[in-house]
Length: 169
Image (cartoon, rainbow, N blue to C red; front, side, top):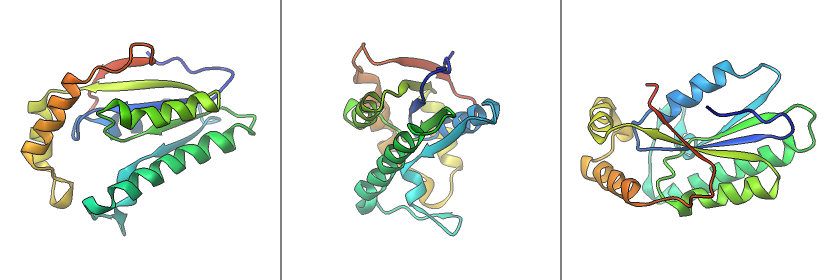
């Protein structure tokens, strides 16, 4: 269970395979937060949305992740001056520690609480959900399998605040 701090913002950094249910979990959590709380989502996928369609271009991934980080940076900077508390969701795969560490450093620099929320969904389930995706949102099976292997093998630093949950969707 994630505890909402009463004295500072909270950054929830999602971690899971494509199709694990990260975005579904974010939406479910946003729906139950008190209305007085400001929320935002930092997601590299948002960079690829054009007129309601997902237009993925792997050459633009660095730009997409930069935009996601800038969204997070803006949230913690702006909310630091507000009296209301906020929750920022970082909705990226965040398989490796190097993908998570800039967000954790940002949270620490702004005295923002954080939790890495691992979404535990089997590779079989992620592959099944991925098969239902259309167009550029579908990921090659070998890529998804590689990501699952990397996530299984990489252990995050034990001092990072982490929780695990099963997929909501």
